[in-house]
Image (cartoon, rainbow, N blue to C red; front, side):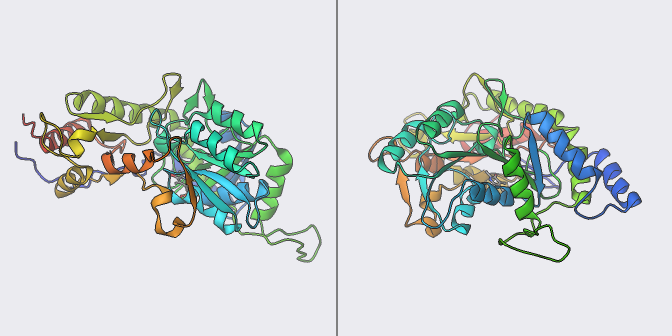
Length: 390
Ligand SMILES: *Cc1c(COP(=O)(O)O)cnc(C)c1O
């Protein structure tokens, strides 16, 4: 079958706007609350708090800023060890370096592709003085959050949950972004809902939230003149940006449903291929932010008798030819040149689950504006890479 190049690009995940965003943004203009205070900010923080089920929400300029403040709240300073998810976006772990801490990367498990509690426990037996743990929920799939939380409690380490990709996902009925002492979400343009850019710190710790607000507004002490006892940051979100988020929040459940439909359609459409989809635990409900495939090892290594060799790059290049975006699995942090001096702990000696996922996995276009017809064509394109033609 001959495919035609798509005229407009099929995206991995791009912003999906409705009418409500413009209503709230216009409202900010009409009332002249265009800076870093206003009703949109208050309502966005309130709305997120109610949706997720946490007491304090601090809207910020980016999810990365929220992680930075969470790392500071955890008391991480020079030379402090922080155990981090290995297969994640760099923003999960970079803020540890902002505070001169030292990341220890924890390998993934195969049930959710997230931080392996077995490797985490092992890492604590090696480095019991670790200050904090940062766990990310990759592609919207909750990690083994209860086990990870328990291990952190056992070793008195502060848990920070990076729910940037997983807003709306639940672990045994409880929303992600509530398992850590400090948690973060992101409103970056590619996430399940967006503010154009932005993020938030989520916590039940009122004192911590107040401290984060203080740091985020240049650490201004309450004096008539500008008085500073600490280094601050300019991390607050604008009320205009918050208006976009306020409008988007109305549509979060709808976005979630469409993401799930996309995942299920891939699962069904690709079921006869030597691949599996990004897995999740039965008692969790991901938000299905990104659908991913993992090619069976023998096939990706060219050792299958039944199938020809197919690699993620071959599929990615084929899709690109037709203007369809896909992306390799996030390259593990322990494989990044910038972190080559950091420690990496795996459950089994000589094992490296992260490297294996990176070698065999691919993120598929999961944009909720993609029509069923378009997705069907993408599925056929993937099948054709494996030599299946309709
Ligand atoms: C997007 C993302 C971030 C960073 O969020 P920003 O709002 O872009 O700063 C952090 N962690 C993960 C896992 C992400 O995917």
